Image (tube, rainbow, N blue to C red):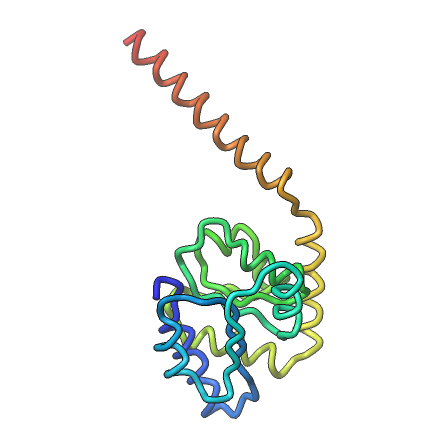
Length: 175
């Protein structure tokens, strides 16, 4: 539930009265699956936990990646979707804002605003060229990311924190 499943459901439900054609694909497995499955339209497809090529195939079969979660620390799921050339619709939260470029690789939405999530989904549903353009930009960005680069940026943050603490400790000893 901490992944924003309620917001996801409300956004999907908001598409129905707008006559936006859609079909939900759920990748993954979690403790709320039965509840989620019960509340999504019967046309929703649940493929369960996927890894490696199966995960890539499942993601690549989608048109858009919806991630209303505000609890992602890095947002690897968004990066995986971008690597499959999917535009990402995500909440303005730490895990998404470090990866998704609003209006370029996807659309960022205020957390919990299911109508705004539905607006973003509708934007991509009615404009396949924009969906393709943002997906390609996401793919280009994903190609720049590798674990060495990601880990290097994390190490740099740690180094800055250590240096600051050392400076503060020196100042406290002098004072």
